[in-house]
Image (tube, rainbow, N blue to C red; front, side, top):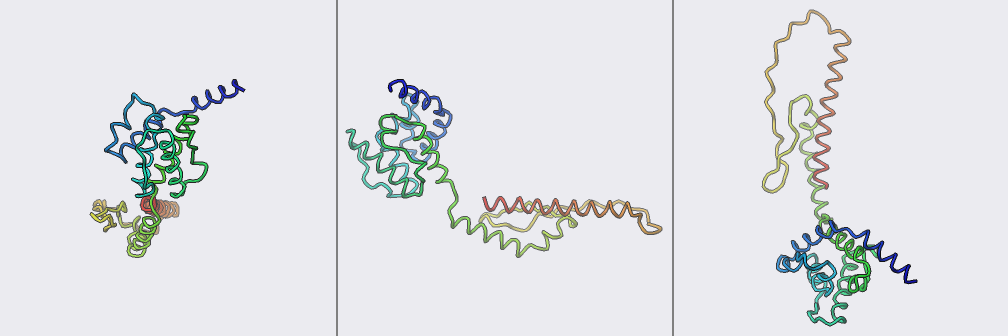
Amino acid sequence: MGGLNQSLSVRKIQRYDKKLEKEMRNWIAEQLPKMSDQILNEEKDLKQILQSGVILCHLINSIQPDTVTNISILKTPFKQMENISLYIKGCTKLGLPQTALFTTLDLYEGNDMSTVLANVQYLRNLQQKPSEAEVTVKRERISQVLKTKPKEIEDAASASIDITWRKDLEDKPSSPVTKPSPKPKPNPVPTGPLPKWKQDLIEREERRRRQKALEETSKYIARLII
């Protein structure tokens, strides 16, 4: 039995991502600048920094205020584990799934720090995810652009318009930037109808330019949605 436990411990250590730990430390320090010296102290490992549960409780409060209202600063094991438990309950309130949670002993006794690290990463991703209200605003903006600018989008290929939209101070799309068209070179006066191969070439070029314009529009719309 002891050999099995030792094997499991070795596996947990092997899958621990030190690079991710540094990334998460930096993010936590950004969220809690007053505690950044303690968080970024490389003389202590992540377990020692988070073990009291105090930093985790302040972290979740920085994302959703008053999620944990009673943070204990006592250094007794019971109170520290209670802080960790309150943090885990707060994660559940924020909508983190069970698979993104860890147990109190995973952190307090260091049984599974990889799961603790994955939880913090999930919380970071949740915090950076745009809210439903922001997504709705962006979708409305896209709809407005497509309603008010259909002529420019439709004729972009043939009108030499750069449809990389500018944004004003309020982050609203403004008029497209129109590039000056190059001076046309004088062409010889045709003496008759164009050959079929030349008509086909002109049509292909027109389709290519129109397709490029629509692709640029799609990229712009994608940037608004993300």
